[in-house]
Length: 238
Image (cartoon, rainbow, N blue to C red):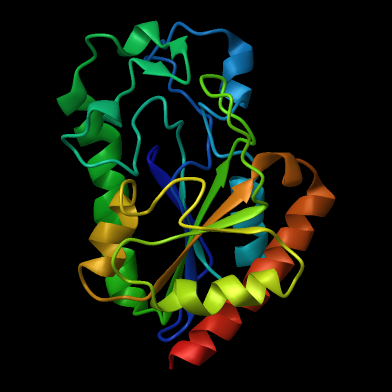
């Protein structure tokens, strides 16, 4: 057991695996963030819906998952070790008092490095045909007037192989798809840059709009759809 991550299912070589960097809102008792409880259930603390969908992918669709076991407010796993937002002192206009002056090195050693070391070893053993990187986004930031109308976003940095296949497949499902939106994978893509782009593994970066992934029925629908899309992408890449 690790307080940094958990793994569900057993990968098979040439299969599909899932990563969920922001799945949890858990905060260790010895790290008081100093924020109201309700903020732990909002987008600044976790990617709403991704934990349940990742669990369903592993349980029902033979897509094993590597899932973060703590809140992104404790340490953001999808950021470089040197990134200012790794231990965020504020998020979307909310001050995080417990992170002001926090010991970054201690958070890296306790959370960030164990998560990524385990993911590196897991992927090396799995030798997957495709990594499904699962995230979700808020329909509107508190610090911005701009709406985010996309129902799903497909993110990538330099490796567009899976994205170019997946976008038309998702659009054919009647979805409004963001091509490197609501933000660009060329700006925020650390986990996939390290574990997919650097070693040359194909990956599909998915962002789901959070108001569409709030119920168990929605979790099941998205898990089924994403499993189907991922399998079609993996087949097309072979």
